Amino acid sequence: MKKIISLLLCVTMILSVFSISVNGAETDLAKTSISIKNAIDNYEKNTGETVNTKRYYFLMPDGSSGLRGTIEDYMYDEYAPSWYNDNANSAGIYWWDTQKIDPDVWPGYKMSKADSDDVYYADVPDFVEVLIFNNYFDGGMDINDPVYYDGHQTNNLYTGGYDVDESDIYPQGLPGFEDMIFVIEPGKSSLSGELTHKTISEGEWYYYYNNGCFGTVKDGDTRNCIRDDHDHENLYINFDPSDAGWGEYEKVYCVIERLGGSPFYTPQTVRTLCTDYDGDGIYTYDLNKSEINLKDYVVYYVYFMTDTGKRTRELVMQTTNIKGTVYATGELSDTYSGSKLRWKEEHKLAIPDFDDTIREYEKENGVEVQTYRNYFYIPDGSDKFKDANGLTLPNWFNEYYTDICITYMKDYSGGFPYPYPKYPVGYSINKGGADNIYYADIPVNVSQYIIGNGVVEYSAPTYSICESFLLGPECNSYYGDGLTDCDNMIFVFNEMDWYSSTTTAMCGGEWYYYYGGTCYGTVQNGSTNDCIRHDHFDENGNHLTQDLVVGDVDGDGALSIMDATEIQLVIAKLKNWLSNNAKALADVDNDGGISVLDATAIQLKLAQLSE
Image (tube, rainbow, N blue to C red; front, side, top):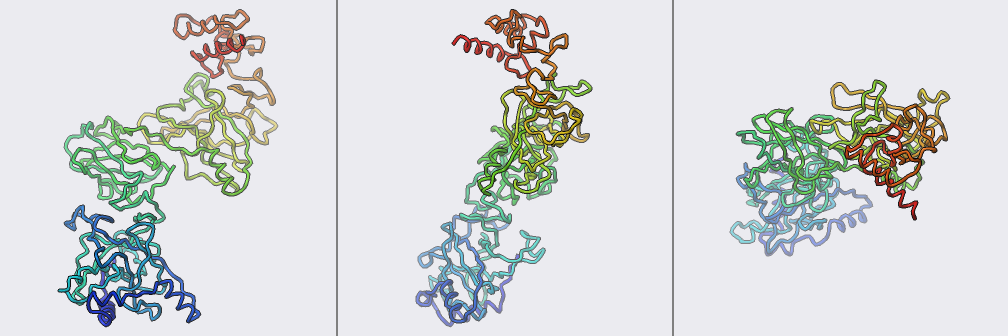
């Protein structure tokens, strides 16, 4: 950070000030009455030149807002002293040596109020190289005059920015401070210039977001605000290790990782340190002060650890899920493999809806997105989802399941936004009319994609995330003549592989013609009679036809209340199935299983027939 007060510039400024006024009584008459805008307009009119401007913001300290001091300042929990008083109620700006549009007298031009009570701004000619913010009051040079102490100003601020490694906060450097805000640092507001005997305050430049919010994240928003007196959404992660059994430790750290990447900050450093503000054993990590630009719908991992090296597992985190205070609790241990971490409050990943995203795109761009519909038969760990080796595919529905999603779209050629940043969560798709059936309307220019169960890898120690291989309208062994597309077809998962280094089940399968419900087959324009599901055949291998009445479990050729009773007896394990035919016919709701829902479906059918 630049902390240099230029001796030459200070002398120039003071001579200018001293020649005009000696005390506070005279300075009221000497204030510049013309605004910056009018001064620029007059200059352009008189010279014919065009003046370009840059906007700078200033946070006028009021003693109760801005940034608190640090422990090093010995002013912890203190704000910068107020610059408002009986003689000053606005911010001012001053510069010199441009030889054009310089303020005539100190304290210069009055700044304009921004979108917050304590934030001001000025549109300054772009050739201004050094400026000073003040409280638009000249306290004069007499240190014995009571009004002397009512005048406040910053040190000389160079608009040219920071060079690389010149700033602790911006080690990458900054080309300039346009559209940024200068904030006074507590504990550095009492520097007295030997030549001026004026109170000079130091501070720092920050990115300005709006509504008084600022921070160190470029292109950030209010979520990245570092103002201590602001209360924002998504502000804290609180961690309760009281049941961890971790023994003695002095410090707790919170580590946030990028999706599939490394931590933003090195674990067990100041940037990851949590604070027990109330002494109640609850450790808080301030996300806004973390200086990480966390974005909605992007998935991150978070874990906690102590200075003794004990830690939790990673936990899935999204900014849209953290509202106010969230506690992470659970059965914890001192080993990575045995540690567990859970959100105390319900924590479901916020996944944008695929249809809504398409509609938003159409509205914003005034176009209609052409789509084709694909269906998907999602495995649930039951016998109806087996691969060629008889191995049952893993259940996609588990404690971490949130939605069936589409992601990793390929061959984007315009007309619809490429959603790769959402990977691997993606967009949620629609539930079909039967259990395990989902569908999505795919933009025609998207030829490949992945279907997944909305679970993020490494989010917990006991789970499997499930994804498909890249799907697309490629023909397979059932269609020797090929397929032009897969519109209104269904993808059935019947292949499985595992990533060797992860807990990700990669499921493949085949495209089939879809007949409705959970029925599918290889006959184009077929019907349920062409369904190739194994539970749609009797014990002799004959396909169940419409001659058999669905729900006729007792085999008397008609649907009756006795059929519902038979199902209930089997569910209660008071009776075994008599035949495979009966078992197949008992699946009235066509969800691939036998449950009380099938008995209820029979009762509803009987009620409809009696009407």
